[in-house]
Image 1 (tube, helix red, strand yellow):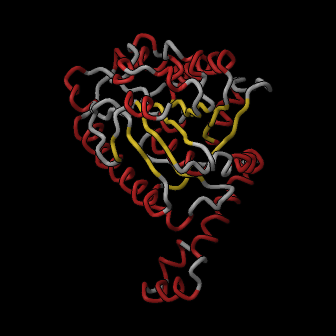
Image 2 (cartoon, one colour):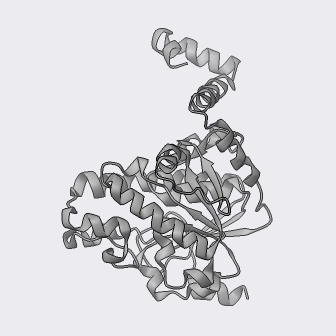
Image 3 (cartoon, one colour):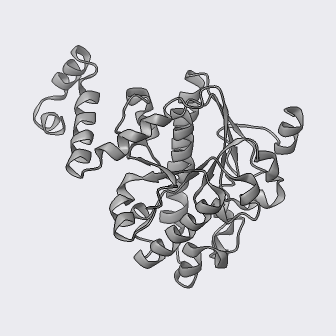
Length: 300
């Protein structure tokens, strides 16, 4: 389709799309499927369809790693369906909360900031925790070869699914959640998680620990998480070389993240899905806000 678009006048592309409204979607998905097949990864990604609408009658809580969760009683979540993002496993109450799902956005998209050796350490630490807390791990298919080469995530007792994050929130109206081969990613792991919660059928999605106020501590040159950098396999190694550009690494990602959140909110409203932000303060103002403690006191 890309080649066709380059040689056919725009008016004919518009006409073709009107005559065959599903053609562009079909061709894109076929290309994605072929690419997975060439890499012998098609069966791995197809397995993820087992999670389609599995939580259509449930609510899902997505927990990030913002510093605000240091002041929230997360034990309210121990009987809830929780998606813990990335290094949430470092939380001191992780063995009591036991997230049902653990999403790891992985090494491949962070190659510019995370060394190969650090990625191995990080995955090793993550896997060690999973064996203690259980739960299903949600992984990017683009890390499969890296994991295999380093003997990671091989334990057969680990429940794991691989996703092919090749779509963006702006694609939601066109692709919906119909495809076996294409999932939604974005500028940060919360985008991945919200889309996966929608894929699982949740009609109520609650966000915790998404502070999005790291721009306020730019001059501190430190990460903004509930844990100290020294406790993180990733940021401990990065600390000595942590040097980011205000425009490229802060302002520009902010714009992208908030645009993607707005696309998710629009889609959610059009499909009767509630996305509620239970984060304590922070800068994320796209979604409806509720107070964390009050929410659980009202819903006991």
